[in-house]
Image (cartoon, rainbow, N blue to C red; front, side):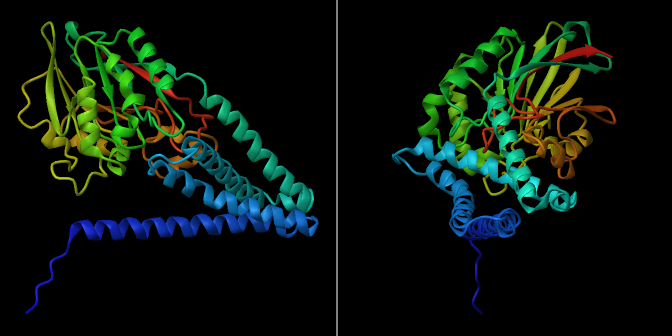
Length: 382
């Protein structure tokens, strides 16, 4: 009898390739739909119609060019290709949504074919321009009070600065990181928590861009947990990189924080997408196993979906990111169809969950209806 042993690495690669092909096929079909709605029935000369379809093809390919450029060393005009590709991705997503909305509202009946196309393109471009402008603004500081039952006086007003989803790389560089560091230090937090998705690229390529994070200071330390994007690149490498910048990496483990007689158990888990990397399976219960008695248990977990396991494990507060709050209109509304918790403070029985809208942005350099934030969590007595 021949025994066939499956190779997990090969299976994983096949799964990734299959996923890419499915996404690419769906992305192409959606653009064909947009092209048909905007060009097929619009009174245009043949030359202009052909030019329009060339534009549709460019929009189909642009994000894949940007993603490929990000994984290619020493590529001429690399940053230009990334910025242009992700901006085109933003325009594409807006065109798709506006075209679908226009069809649902039967705008073609009211405006005619030409008016429909003008409304869709004009609306998408207007949102794109405003979103590009909003994304360039500094992240706002959002102060959130979290009431904890029985909080001792020594922990009253304990401040945790949460940074999340920086996504340093294609469109966000060192100057952005420097501004985040200056603003965060100006808040004088007791502790700093970085809840994943630090960068989009390999550590050696982005070492200089993230280097200012070494300047973050807090009397009770700074801590890091992995997000899903660390696993798209080099999770183990990014853990080492952040440790080199002075962070304590909480890879399914905890640390005791003392202020006076008050005690906080701060735990962290790897991202839910970490399957396959030894020792990185996300486990909120294991992260707090053997922890000493404390007044508060806080979990750092990139994805809000970890909250259900965290609640069962007896945490008082979970800090997460991942959703970007939808990042830009209308996706800040649509993301609620796929995420149980999108942004802000939520209550799950005895546990609190705070979901950051993210400090940076991913993909399209857009922010609209979901402003970037640096969060200052303040513990208060309930």
